[in-house]
Image (cartoon, rainbow, N blue to C red; front, side, top):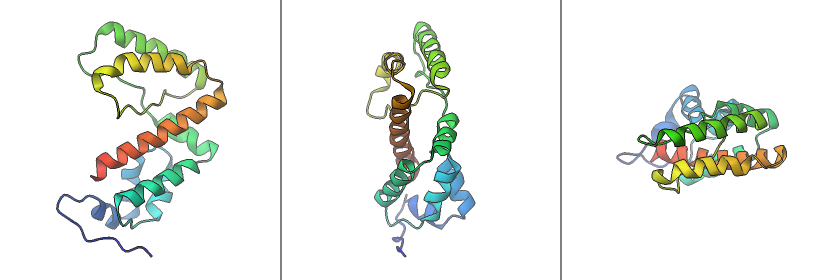
Length: 160
């Protein structure tokens, strides 16, 4: 069994490790909408550090069954533009996202953590339009990878 390290001020991993399973799973479901994924990651606690948790989260994401991936993708919210974006960009995003939803049956998933928020409006619309040309199986693989990246970013935000 891995021993958890002693908590430090501002450390959120120690309380996560010590939380009841249902509490840990609820926190994890905020990062990924697959209940099986959340149960699996919670069951492997305690984690010695955030890196170990991220590695376990990645492994669990790679191992999602088709049904688990569907559950996770359908739990995602549609992309939104940052406050102050122009109305034309919002209209273009809605139209592109509606076309994506019709073609693939789940919200468009993309991790934009590496980009500046002011770049998001143009990137979101062009990204959706570009991925609309993917075959369904290819898009599923792309969406799964973007979801994995989102999960990592969300975990880092809640635990550091």
